[in-house]
Image (cartoon, rainbow, N blue to C red; front, side, top):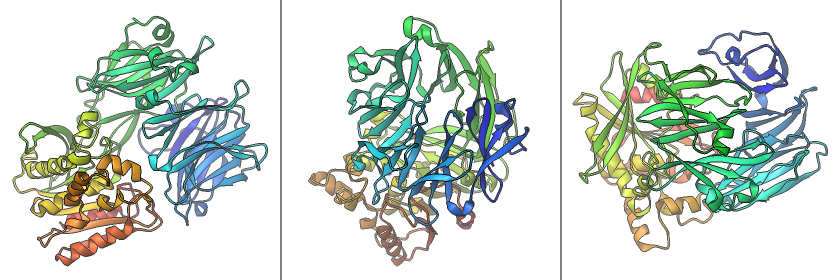
Length: 603
């Protein structure tokens, strides 16, 4: 297994897993991206050199590797083998020796452009949430200081701009922007930018000696806009922003090349790549966008541009994938005059993905449903997944678990219930707080109506949900156990009623906004009626598989065990899948995957 890190000084860097250890490797200068982005698992096509090794006994999983622009340092983040946190290791590329090691690290780190320091996210030791951005000197190991601190209950997330000049920390509805120190600029913290909190994918670029920021957002009417901000000083002055409406169903991605701005959008339910000369956009706002429509297979559901993107290249790699098939890598050449690219008839097809709507019990709301149907030897089982919280949309990334289900002839479906993000913020709000019952009823309505969509009148429905999705599945099970032949829940949020009352809960603020205010009697009364742990009744419950992660701080493992005991007392068969050493992972590939498939096949 190998994965690209990026091109530095003409060399391609990538990490290679040889089955025993992970090596950071370097290619010759003439190697192209296609050599290390093959469509399938194949041999690397060029000569390469091993730079340094990461011993497999030193970590549980490799999360990221970054190399500075002079190939002097490598910063790697790994999950500790023994403890529930990640480590940051800074390695001297010439010697392969660690000279800095730090614990309790969040996702992402960035080496400054002048190679003087590394910025990284520090996590709270009890909750695992990001609490600080810290700066570690690379010239004096003892120099380490806090640049900005955050309320960890807001569950901050960190992103870096592609040019490695800014860090953006999203915390609640606010964004803190940190300009990193460099030879030409001092470090600067632009704090609490409320207006920019709703802007997605903020990018930075210097154009004719002027600093510009680009991003996109959607308003409450589901209109999509490209945002252009002229200079740091205008970040807080929202009235100075240029808002350019993009008439599409959705903007999915944004990136900048040397002289182009590129948008990945959905228009009329088709994937389009729109691009424009960036100077023409900034200085002449009425320029027409050029379009390339991507015609994908029926089962190809997701297009993603492969990072890191080299801004001075005309050809950019992207992957096409779906939950049941591995990514295939292709190239988009912006110098060619193409209006469409057709992949609809390429490759083998053992499954098909289709979109449907099921009418909810209110007689008005249509609930979107995605169904992945096996073509070969279909069985009378369908795994119905759900999340339905925090405005999060279903992730169409490749999943070995879903591929295994399809290979075994088992249907997989996803219910896009209210509370998720499929139809914008209104859809989210229709399934949060006092409206959380809508998420559960939507899921039950899909479970009871999905048989006719797969043309099987006696198809067994197996409920599946992780984290907050586990709450929806378990609550639906309490309301109507007969709707399911079985359930598989992973790290379920099994008692939000107690979570919103516990101020020590690391996700207390987020959970309170999503599920209800403990000081509001109506919120508490509604949640008491819905909370899975408190509402198990003496009904006939179907078999259940419950996965529990040893070092999970996002959910309460003691309550999950209590839930299992209560289910068993009703006479239900409940299997426990304990993931030793795991944190809050959900349905990712694991050593236990065969156990999950075997359990589903038994139902």
